[in-house]
Length: 123
Image 1 (tube, rainbow, N blue to C red):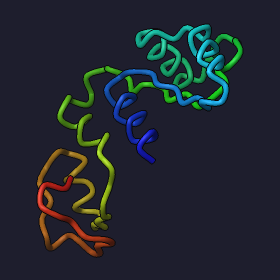
Image 2 (tube, one colour; image 1 turned 180 degrees about the horizontal axis):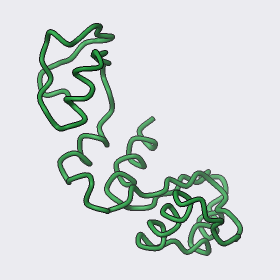
Image 3 (tube, rainbow, N blue to C red; image 1 turned 90 degrees about the vertical axis):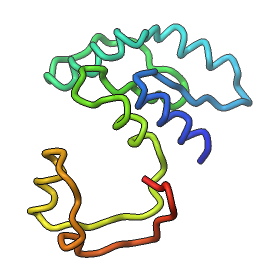
Image 4 (cartoon, rainbow, N blue to C red; image 1 turned 90 degrees about the horizontal axis):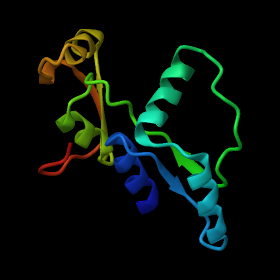
């Protein structure tokens, strides 16, 4: 779980990340030969989003975490929050969901359910 959290943190920061079985260290070379720099990775994600067929090349042997595009739609603070593990879930009504999407505050009367618990400084 720690490796996945680290990969999530890196990819949220715009850094491509790979997990490889330590029994086969030569597989790291498949990630290097895959050759994605952060800007190339963003271009690949953009192509896929536009439903263009990306260039065909062998995939790395392991798990590749593509970076989150650095297009300015998500600020550094929000990227950091996205990289944190969730400790609980909050269910809100439609009015609140629209307000949160518009970067407005969460009001307690719009919370319909909570699963788990929150500690001080949890996100």
